[in-house]
Image (cartoon, rainbow, N blue to C red; front, side, top):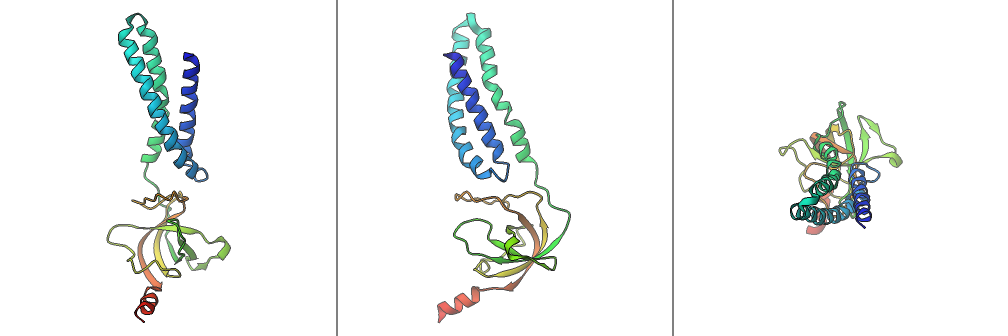
Length: 205
C-alpha cells in the first residue's frame, strides 16, 4: 500500500513538473498555465499531508527513524525539480540587437490578446497573410501611448526592438489566458492615423 501511494505521488509530481515546464514553451503555454495550477494545488495538499505524517511518525516511532528520515528526503526530492524552473523565470528577457521602425494597425479583437498588426517593418510592407500580431511595451513610464489611441484601424509608427522570445509586456495581466506573442519595446512613436476624433465627432453629432 505504501509503495502504491509513493508511486502515485511521484507520478503526480512528474505530471506537475511537465506542465510547469510546458508553461515556458510557446506551443504548450496555455495548457501549462491552466493545468499546472490545478495539479500544483493537489501536489501542495498531498505533499503537506505526506510530510506532516512522516514527521509525526519520525518523532513518535523512534525505532524506525532511519526509515522515516529516508522517506522524508525522498518525498522532498520533487521540489528540487522546480529549481531550474525558477532560475529560467528569473532570467531577464533579452532584446534583439537590431533596431526596427515599424508601422502597426490596431485590430479590435474581442480579447486581451496581441492586437497590434505589423503592416510595415523598416520600410518593407508586410504581406497581409504573414503579418505578425504583437504586443507593445514602452521602454519606460515617460513613453506611453495615450488612451485616445487604440481604436480599430488606428495606425502608429514606432521605433524600438523586439524581444528574442515570445511572451507578454511587463506588468501584463489577463484572466483570459491569451496566447504568447512577439513583444515590441518602443522608445518613441508617431500617430499616423487615429479614429478617435472621428468617433468623437459622430458622438457629438
